[in-house]
Structure formats: structure tokens, C-alpha cells
Image (tube, rainbow, N blue to C red):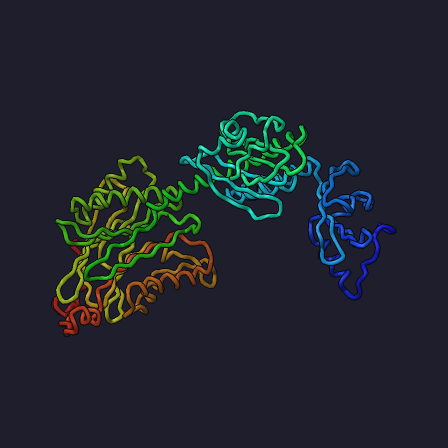
Length: 529
């Protein structure tokens, strides 16, 4: 550029800083002096785009130009840059360059809104002054997105009946080839398109997967569209339509997945009368949010005042385990309606799984019935099927295992279930949990299991805490142990008898009778074996 670019008429570090700033942008920029139209600075992108640039390429009397230089179709627009200076912003309108940019940007996202915005931005940058993307009608309305020049992106919708106001739009949305621009009367464009005065109108389809993904409406203020412009617009629209169609399909799949997940996610627990019920669930895969561990609770019925609780672990993780989890929960819900006791629920569920044909899938479970007892105590009947026994945190800080046992559910035709009865004194907690809690690997070696001794010690440290605080503390401790490593699904369900303070407040300050009632043993667990 020697002899072409003059020095900036400033002092100090400003010229170097300005050059560095302009060189950092991907847009080709030529800085000129407004007094004599001399070129002051050409950034790196402009030097690469137009080697041997001279001011003969553009006229100082126009704010835009289109020219061919060294085999490139160039387009430029002039913008003022403070007093005494202006800049030319150059673009390469060569077909290959435009389509390469379109492919790169459109393939970068599966977000439908972002694809629509990118389509409009590329169309305004390379093809027209205004671009409107119109989606096929849904529920008798059609959504649109519009971009005009340097203005903001606007969005809206119109009734399906108004689509016929745009020449050629109905045909394009129905999958017919576009009508040539010269046959369209631009003056008939309706006001909702927001094109303003236009000298050229083009309506082209956005081809999708077996059906149109929408339509692209282009408007030019001054010049009409040539045959080459229309061909380029059709090729560009084909790429944009494929991207929009893929994004729409992805959104549909995401919405469908969300609906299916909603019924598989942990439920809202019923408000229990006389005891606290708290659940927690962490999927092995955070993005999926569902897995093979689960808990559920079913409130009292007209014939039975007990609350039924369940916590289980389906063999495996991910979607397949989640599907079987949903089937197990629905089976339990149906058995609850016929007032089956916990042990009978496990036996019937075992037969149901064996008859489903999925012999490679089994379940470990704890099912229990919970009911209020006298003096603020809570009684539970717990039945397990191949699952870790529940733990009881007593008032003195000791931790006991519930003496219930049983075989895996869905593994063998004859299942053995040995339920157990326990009683919680005020302030005591029974914890049901999945083996993902004790088998969480981490610690100093990153492979050591958290283990039952740590769980017992951690639960003992929760003496006097509400059920919600107990579950949250255990969850935090195991999370710290794993410290971001790989983990299995983890489910917890806690049943806590109200504390004596809570009972006093509930009874209006009346003293709470002593909880020592059954042979002085504070309601220790008893197996029914």
C-alpha cells in the first residue's frame, strides 16, 4: 500500500491503537479522510480482500457501491466515523464466499430462534435490504421474524388468512416452486411485512425435511432482483431451510422428551399428618435428570389411613432404566388402590416384572407403610427386596439397621420377603436410600467408596436436625466426597417423627408425655420373620 495510504493526522499512541483495533475485526474496513477522500488506513481484512486497493474503487458521492475486482464481487457501504472521517465497510459477494459463511454459521446451532435470526442476518448482509422469515402456520397463525438493515430483529405472528396478502407466499408454503421476482408486484406487499418502499420483492421457499420449513421474503429498496440473485437466494434458502428444519425437529424432540420426563421425575410428596416426609434424588447424568433410582409416596385412601412409601433401584442407568422405573411406580400405585400391604406389593411386582419379558432387568426395593401412633410416635412396616436395609437415627444419636430382608425383585419366580415393624419416638428419623449413596467413589484416591461406616457416622451427626436438613447434609457430604467425579444415581427418602417441641407447639404448649412405652425399649425394630 506504499504511496496509497497516508499517515493518520494524529499524535501519540492513537494510530497504533486504532490499527490494532481495526485489525482485530474480521470485517474489511477502509478509513478515509472526509476532506480529500484520501485513504488513511486499511485493516488486515480489507488488505486480504482487495489487494492493491485504491480509492478509484469507490465514489465519494455515494454511500454504497457494487463492483467487480480481481474476480470478486464486492459490495461496500460508507458510514461516518466521527468528525472529519468516514469508513468503507466492504463485503465479498462472491457466491462461494456467501454460501461458505452461510454453511458455517447455520450449522453452528440447533436452537430454532438462533437459526431464524442467522438466516435473516445473512440475507440482509448479502442478498437484500430487508429479510422476513415466515414459518408454516400452526393453530391458524404463522410466526415471522424480520430484520431491516441495521435495525433490531423483530418477531411476531399473523393469522393464517393474512398470508395470502403476500404475492406468492401461499404457493411457497405449500411446497410449490417460487414465482420469479419480475412477476411479483412489490407494491402489493402488506404492511405487516415491514418492507417499506421496495423496488424488488422475492419470495422463496425454505425447503425442509419432506415439507417446507418456511419461506424467505426479501426486499430491496432500489434495485430489482436479477436471475443470478434469485439463483443465489434459492441456494442459500435451501441451506437455511435444512438448518431450520433440523432445529425445529430438535425442539420437537426436546419438547417430547420433557413431557415424557415429567412423569418420570421424582414426585411431589404428599403432606403427611403427624410426621415429616422428605425426598432427594440425583441422577447419574445431570443433563438427563432421570435414571434408575426412584422414590414415591401414596397418601391415605378411604379404606386405609396409612401412607405408603417406596424407594427402589432399577438395574442400570439412563433412559432404559427410567422407563422401567415408570412401570414399577405405576404398578405400585395400582397396588396401593387395592390396599395391598408392603410385602404383597413386592410379591406381585416380582411376578409382573417376570411376565414382562425383560428378564435382564431387576429391581431392588423398600416398600413401607407409615402411620401415626400415640404420644407423637410413628410406626412403620417395611419390606425389602434385595435392597440395603433402611437406617434409623435414634434420639441418643445411635444408628440402627432395620431387620428387614428379601430377595431381588424380578430375578427369580419365588421371592422371599421378611418385613419388619419399627417405631420412631419424637425427633427420630428413618432413612431409606439407594446403594448409589454408599458406593459413591471419591476421596483422596478418587476410587474409594463412601461406604456404610461413613453413612452411619454422617447420619449420627444429624441428630436433632429436621428431615429436610438431614437429607441435604447427607447429599452435600457425598457430593464433597465425589468432588465432581463419576457417580451412580442417588435416591433418599426420610421419615421423621415430629420433635417434642413441635408436638408441644401443636398441642398449644401442653407437655408431651414420655415416649418410653413399649417395655422401655423406645420402639426398637422387630422382624416378622
